[in-house]
Length: 399
Image 1: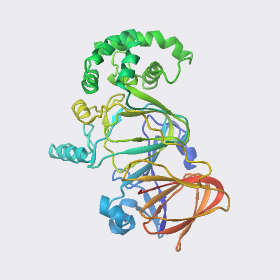
Image 2 (image 1 turned 30 degrees about the vertical axis):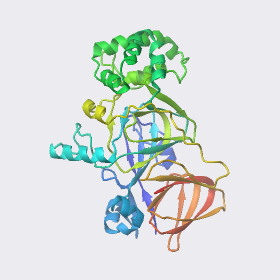
Image 3 (image 1 turned 45 degrees about the horizontal axis):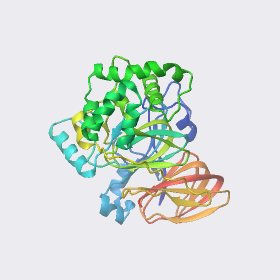
Image 4 (image 1 turned 180 degrees about the vertical axis):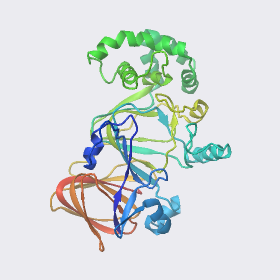
């Protein structure tokens, strides 16, 4: 079966004002932020589907119709949709964050429940008992932080800035985890001593837009500017621009974020697909709760060489991006006018039209979907995608 699917907006203040409304073809309210569009069955923001002319929450539909998920999905993940599909518009930097393993999430969720911490409390870290590996595909030029650089590269980066030279000498004698712990627990006076000379030295170049975007100094000044960070309340996360890989993705390239890898989205729009979880352990650049002990327990400080997920080949009409994830996979379907693809959903799937317009047909249903519209496809359904206006769609499913 195929059902029209409607997601939910998230109006976080780091979002932009126009991109998501334009994608969804909805009016943009004045001074409103449009950060994320969620498509899935997470309990905090479930999508709805159209059943017999009525809107039904996807969570409620799956409770009554768990076979819609498919036998493989139910055997591995129980009677819940295992993934969450999002569109993000990152107008301002997001917090540095990382996500737990499945075991860490189960332990953390149980411990916070036993302590009586409300699920919506600002000091709550674990919102559910699931891990949150995630992948993203860039919809524009996209910048992010991803994992620790090679230790020798970090030392070189620090040593080339006079105010950070003491940190370079310190790192010679420490492993990355101990070094990172000291950074994250640094006092304001120490942060000011490290950062204020860099701010003074680079302010004019930043204002003249002459700093290269591969230069961590640029991102320090940009983040302070974009997030209105006061110089007497500097954030330890600012030092991480010198420790982590600064990654530039071109449109349609992507990256995979595994458990424990610190990362932060800095600028751009993307498609994001993840395990169905909202567990975020923050590592700075946020006014929200930062649980330093939990951060240091979960963080993976291994040296990371970013692995870019390449764009879908232009001659590949149907293409699945390669990641190690077991909870999700993202398929790209290209179509021209009159072009038809025949597919079968092995697991419950969500199809989102990114560009153009298509007809989605099964034996019992036919739905026309234009840019920004989506459908929920039950496991076992054979269906056709027929292009009406040239474009492409993405399909979230199991591997």
